[in-house]
Image (cartoon, rainbow, N blue to C red; front, side, top):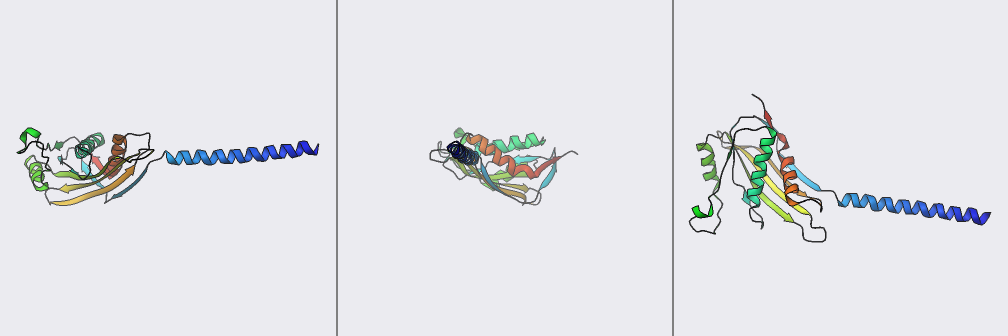
Length: 194
């Protein structure tokens, strides 16, 4: 009888250890699949839906070709989804318009602001893409980092800014991580009805 009780006690203790072990493994696997982010924003800003906003060409501080084009296009579409209806998209010169084909040069900010003013924009969204790739390693997690500024063209000053970075889940694509990051960064820019 005592052997039976001793075996049952050992079995129950073993099961408890197994459950604890599996719970710990489960929690670590949940944490490993999560994305992490860090975002710093200036104050929030509310603009009328029909406010003319120029989306300028972003700086690309990465080794990823066209990361700046992807980020500025995502920002434009995120603003449209928020209800902004009067977006003016700056189109950088195409290869056939460049003086030396194949040599990519970023148009100066002053030139882009001139373009925005000539099209009647009240504000201009400008930014830099600082990271836009996959981490090298077993998980190959997508990483994105950017900074954004909203410039009031009548006062020629930055009225809103945000900087952020994000490590995505190894099961998510880079565009998902980038869109999530930019969406969280633009969270405090709201469209008001007139």
